Image (cartoon, rainbow, N blue to C red):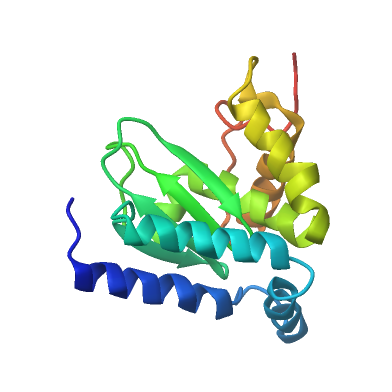
Length: 184
């Protein structure tokens, strides 16, 4: 799906707007903290995530932007695979043709989206330590040997997603592709 310059500008505006969106499932003070945290506690991954996601938009590698729980999802459609990268409040996705839905339904209907959302929770918990403690080990695991799906950073993300989406959206978590425990 090709993108025009005007479409890319609209997507870039949506990405930048994502810096200021918060989770309506949180209390008023929880939303204030979520917003302030992005520019203080989570600043490194916020800046890297925003820059990386904008770069993908400008390079024509984002077809759509969706938001859920104050998290911005930038997606390239029609890939032969599905994968994601979470940096701060931004989730960058490459969606396989089997991934369907619009807006909230897209996120709730594709477990990889919820898994990546789980990483954003660790971003909020670890703050400045997120990139070296969670992000880098996860990246190395993804390109290393072994089963990335049962690496400890991925199990954490799955656990966060299972709890969040179970509580707020009554989603029954599928442990098959996204386990919450390493049973090996």
